Image (cartoon, rainbow, N blue to C red; front, side):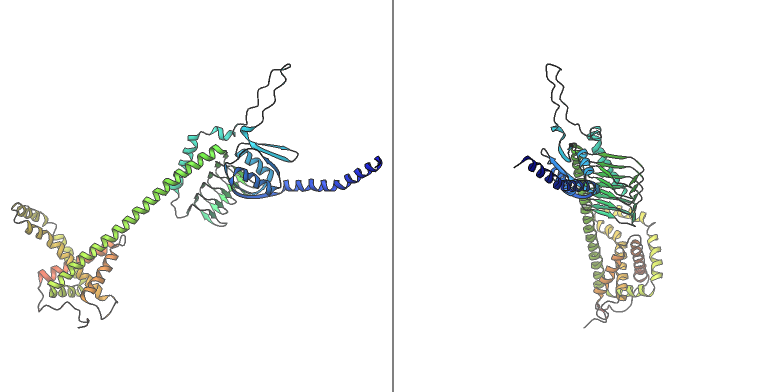
Length: 463
């Protein structure tokens, strides 16, 4: 082939390839200018690969980058994201002709030594040190900061408008307003308004709304979107603070990134969450034990009172019927008499104690002394069961088919349940006891019932 023909072919190929090269250059610039959204959790190598694929970058990764990484990026430039990851994890990043090379800082190449005849050998370039923020923070200081913040979060998150999430993500929606927001082991998104601090332990914090206090992420990144406003400080331990255009922070902004700090924060968070979990489990166990004890006490009270009432109906049917009728006819008068009788027992305690001592000394009088002390409580208990029977007869349950035992059981259940109501229950029990005690005094000690004993079965019960 002639040289002139060869030159013509080369010129034609160059002219044909120029538009394609120009299109590729423009496409690369377009990719570099576009923003990306990345949400990834895995190894550091895979995270860098994810950013490269999303942003259309040419990235070469050197070394075993198996460190766990969590990336949450929204509307950021791919090259900016890559450089931020390099700073956060103390990596060496180089760029040449649009190709990025990422390697661990410890494997940075050293400068070649000068020839020995002319100049003394130059010392090798030391590896790139960790970030200034990472090297300036002591490990004990990081641990204490995490512990202190977790204590503050637990003590302050007790209000009615505080929101707390454990083991899941949380979102303060647009238009919503809360006092504070704390998340353990999840991500927090703030689109609304928070009047105090927002804290995330073991997750990322994204803010596009308004936070009047501080914003802290321990073991994750802080992403301040367009329109975000934080009046306090913003910090990230074990991550980085990504501030997008339009975000405003009135306080300081700190990022304590790096693999070392990330591991410290992660370990301290696991320990703190484990202690909190055990504490909650112990508290739940105590509450469950208290519930069991409360039910057992309720059951014992019901059984004892029902047994006494049923025994009274068996042994003294006429007296118990007169007692119930008197309570139903004059409850207020019986209550007054019961109160006076209870007050009269107070000055009688001293003589009773003296008599008890004398009887106990004789040994033979011990049963008599015990009986003297049990008279008043047993009378009050029998009066209480009579009040319960009066209430049970008025309940609109199983009308026409109630026996005296069923009537008393229904009334006792109602009184004992009402007695467990806070602030009001003790007044119900005291009132029922005084009314029953007054009826005992009026019917058993003041005037005796007349007539023959009546059967236990109610008049409506089937024969």
